[in-house]
Length: 498
Image (tube, rainbow, N blue to C red; front, side):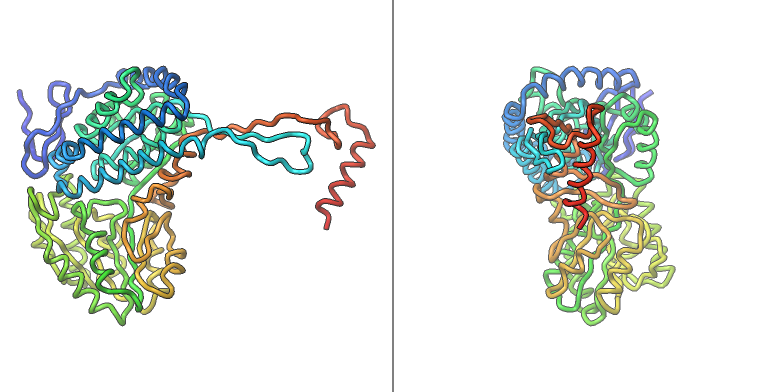
């Protein structure tokens, strides 16, 4: 019997994972479902391939990664169309996502040797007879569990850095976007045909669990905080280290001296790009009382101009059909608890679409403020001053990103946000800056991708000391004498006893 295809809901049919467009229901991908044995085999094969890949050295890997980058750049429209069909994302948004991913591949490839390569480390006087050496060696095989909302940018944020560091990578794409994940793997194989350095396994959550237990040397996960806890528990069974990017409920603060036009423009982009399905998207806004009304009017005007639909629109469908219920519940609870809709509201929910919604004066204990919504909705609340805004922004357990608009105090306010990242007078920009680390705190996870920290995340620090002279103050030997120890004590008192 042929299974019924409900738009956007992945199904298993005849041993294959079938993904469909959430907007039209058209079939977007059909990939074989991996068994536990398949996952283990993929990891075992990757381990062999990884040894070959590590043996290419930084220069060899740099050349291959730059060729992959060039291939993605040449086929950017093709990949954007796959992203659009499978996840519903507008083509323009897909192109922006791919451009950012290409930038990260380029930076990782060009900087891996400088950041991770062997180097001398200065020794201190107490061990002056030794030289110190540091290098970062690849873990071996890195598992990557990717999300559906940014199926190119997010997996590549881990995979490209892991590959540049000398690891092989096994990717488990989201079951909502397996075709995108396979496209990435297949394109990489075109420039690295010799070994299966970058491979994919497909299926539902049980395949991700199998990858956690498959013997990978490190696992990078992006997804909900609830699933992150399950991933950590599975990896803990074998003490497999993990990198976690969990959920977010990012806040934007609008101070009294902010450029309100710029703030409103950035707020609408940060909250509603990709239909609001962005972990670092702006979901909460705190505007200082003196600018609140004007700011809300500007946001409503801009958000009200956005178009919604399957083709050529600013906002596409909600990718996961069940998320529509979450968005509806948040809007309903916000209004029931005393908030009001300055734009949109309950009528904005028209599955598979949600039209832009701006909620104001929403109580802080409302689900719309407390929980991740993942839709084109914003809550904008009035605060006395920036201090109150910071207190409210930091009140939730999430801590991924954030944004501050203002002049005199903006940077100081951004530093006070309990988050891994913040943008001043912009939104989301830290994600595209390949030189900066990306990651969160609290329920938003730990570990970093991107930048130098992202490269080091996928290498094991290896410390080596080398004797270069006789010890003047021998201590770590049974050949030491009382005179040696007396000299050592005297030296320590002279060096550190002041």
